[in-house]
Image 1: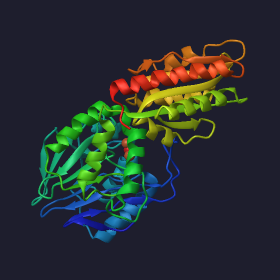
Image 2 (image 1 turned 45 degrees about the horizontal axis):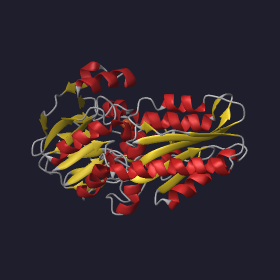
Image 3 (image 1 turned 90 degrees about the horizontal axis):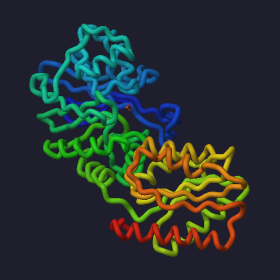
Length: 395
Ligand code: FEO
């Protein structure tokens, strides 16, 4: 990566990770990612906003050398997760006079995670400002976007908001700015689904706070910079809104074809009733795609055969993930097949117990589904249609 100017005296100095395939050993990265770090040169002092993932620290250090910066007075840490904080100890070695500026909670985490000495910190409060001379940084606490210590940094004179993970996208690109908005929107939605969706209520609150600021540019810590902030703020507003789409998501596994037959019966019935459907075979589904579908769906129907008296582990994984991501869907149900009994429905219902979704009566079948079973699935589709109409699910 090279040093690139966002605005006068504001530079992008982080690293593009073109080849990273997986994040947190969980999230697939179809388009790689970047770790954005921003250098802000004021008339009197200089600040570095966030750093990079430790394996890419050489790029950050090379970029700082290329920039010609002679001293960094402040290292602003918006978030303690190591993909942004991990190179702070290296920057402190290069610039020993530098101080890490962050909130008290983040300081505690950085001491625990990176063993940074407590005397290296300046602790700030929500709304506090820090002068770089002709530029002023304002700190805006944004807890639970997505950790308890997360915060934003607002560069007042230039009206640039640095949001760290919030509004980011896992996208390795040579574009400094989000010029390909169609592509960035998809990857930002994927990012929201995988990382931010469980925190929807607090994100709503922070979006309102951002609206009260005059923001001309947004610098997240993953993916391109937004020189048209309205584009990403409007998209984010849509994802966190309470409204749901006329869409049913069906995560499923089938071992001998019975459950698959039920799934296709339900898919046909829903399509005939004008309802959109997305199905995910959990033996090979991309969980990022599943998470993205859950952002908008009104209903989720889990479909499983019976394994050792419960649902198939692939469907258990889908239900566990759904419960953890806390999407806004209103209705859930289950279809599936068994040979001699089992507690499939109880297990899936139990996994979804933390959500506010209404559980619609399931359809379970002994062995292969017969004509009458398809009629029961048609009735389930009728119920889903009625419910979607009642809440005004969007087409
Ligand atoms: Fe990109 Fe929460 O770290």
